[in-house]
Image (cartoon, rainbow, N blue to C red; front, side, top):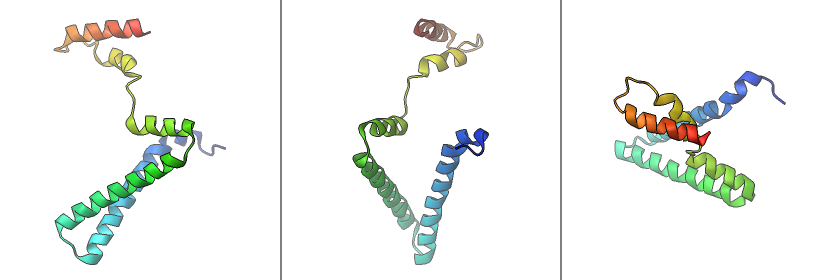
Length: 112
């Protein structure tokens, strides 16, 4: 059920921003409460990164094969659309690497 169809594409970026702010707030509150030095704040951040990576690994361990493939694809990124993207960015005649852009454009045309 979609309550606001236009907002669906913004759910992941907004959620990522909110969770990053919560992590930063957690580090800030722990550092203020204990009155720690800058080095300790950096170590708190590193510990939090490892904690989140461990939680992600735990999720990956308990998921199905399809979901695992989707999570790995999402977390690593992909260059599958690079052939389409190069057609839009490298076709300007004022570009200093225009000959390279022409080769990429030819590769884009062959990829279609």
